[in-house]
Image (cartoon, rainbow, N blue to C red; front, side, top):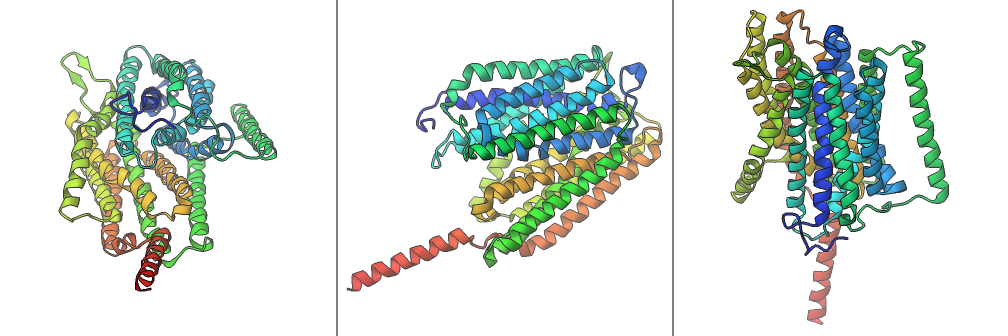
Length: 515
C-alpha cells in the first residue's frame, strides 16, 4: 500500500492522479455519448438518426443506463475474485474504447453492438476504479475523504468536457464524429493509465479474495457462456428471429431488478441472524433505498425528456449562434463543482450546532427539492403548449434544483449504506443499494416515453405527475423519518459487542483494583 505520509498529487498518493485522470476521460466518453443517445435515436433518417419513436428511444436509454449500473455488480466480483482491480480497469477501458469506435461507424446495427460493449466495459471499470481510490490510503489516513472529493471532481470535470465536445461535434459535424470523440477521450485515458500504472504501488494488482483454480475455471466458463449467449441473442434480434420491443423489455427488466433487490434484502434481513437493532437499522435504510430509486427516476429525465425539450421547445439562439442541445446538461456538472464545498461546510456547520438531521429526512428533502424542478418544467411546458419557445433559464433553473437535490440525497444515501448496514454485510449491501440506481434509471426511461413531441399539450401533465409523485414520496418519508431517526441511532451489533467488551474490561479492572 502507498505510504500514507507520502504525497505528490495535491498532497495525496501519486496513484490518485492516475485514477483521477483515467476516470475523468472515462466519464468524458460516457457522459458525452449518453447526452446524445436519445437525440440520435429520435432524429430522422434525413438528420442521420435512427428515427425511433420517443417511447422506444427512451426505453433503450433507460435500459442502457440501468444496465450499466447493474453490470457493476459482476464487474466488482470479477476484480475481487479473478483478476484484480488494475486489470479490471485496464480491460474495461479497452472494451469501452472499442464500443465507442463501433458507435462511430454509421450503421444502425453496429450502434447497438457498440452500446453492449460500453455497458460491459463500464461494468468492469466503474466500480473498481472507485474502490482502488480507497485502497490508496490506510484505514486511519485522514486524507481519504479529501481524496474522494478530488476524485469526484475528476468525474464532473470529465462530464463537463464530454458534454462540451460531443455536443458541439454532433451539431456541427455529425453524430458519429461525436461518438468517435468519445473513443479518442477513452484512448487518452488508457494511454496515461498504462504509463502511470506503477504509481498505484501495487494497489489492485491482485484479487482481494481469489478463487481456487477450480473455481476460477468454472467462473471463466460461466462468463464465456454469458458473452456467447449475448452475441447469439443479438444476432437473432438483428435477423428478426427474436422480436425486441424496447418498452416491454424495459418493463420486465425493471420488475426483475426490483425482485432481485427485494429477495436479496429479505435474505439478509430474515436469514442472517441479525440483532433487533440491526433489523431496525435496515428498516431505516430501506426507506432511503426507496427514496433513491424514486430520485433517479426523476433526475435521469435530464438525458431523455428534458433533452428532447431542450431540442424542440427551447430558444437556443444567442445572436447567430445556436447552443448545442447537449450543452444544457453540463449545467449539472457546473453546479456540482460550485455547490459541493457549500454543502460540505453546511453539514459540518449544523453538526456543530448539534442539529444533525437523520439520513431519511435529508434524503426526503433532496427528493422534494428535485421534484420541485419539475414544477418549473410544468410551467415551461405550458408555454411550449401555447406554441412558444421558452428561454434557456427554465431548463437551467430545473438543473440547479436537481443538483441541490442530488447533493442532499446522493452522498448522504451512500453514507447511510455504510453506516446502517451490518458491518459483516457492508459490501453486499452497497451492491444491493446500487440496484436502486438501475431501477430508477429504467423507470426514468419508461416515464420519458410519455413525452410526445407531436402532442405538446400532454407534456405539462408528464412533468406535474413526476413532481407530485416524488413530492408525495418525499413527504411520506419525512413523516416516517421522525420515527426512523431513532432506528438510525441504534447501536450496531459490532458497536454493542465493543461496548460490552469495554464494560467487561472495566468491571475486571475494578475487581482487580479492589483485590
